[in-house]
Image 1 (tube, helix red, strand yellow):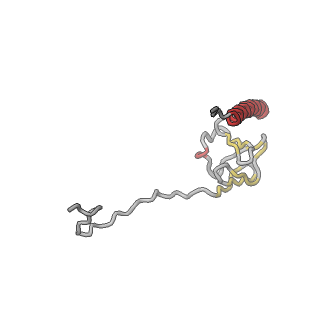
Image 2 (tube, helix red, strand yellow):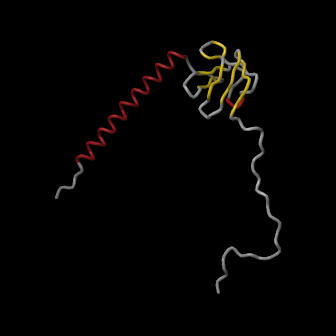
Image 3 (cartoon, helix red, strand yellow):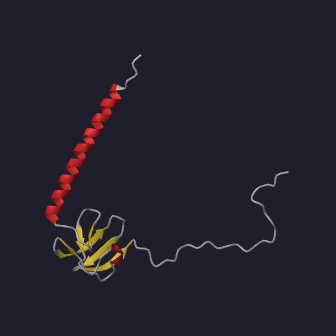
Length: 129
């Protein structure tokens, strides 16, 4: 009895071929974007819809972004509200950051409060007899 899985083998081959073509297209798209927008530098971050916010040399990482930071979009001062991929909303007026929504305030990490001892022994399991 012949137990070869020809339909499954052809499906896997087609799937692999499709993945190779998609990877090739992805590389071409990334190359085209890099040529069109130029290399991405430190202080530049993509928004959720793919726009590039450029903060300049004062900001290196996204955690350095603070109210009062200046940014540009397509070489023009940023204006309006931009949603970042992590859900934070940055509001700009005339290129200056005026508000960051969705940011946690300076909160201390949760600390588990230890209960005071009750004075009685409570085993985790029943003792064996």
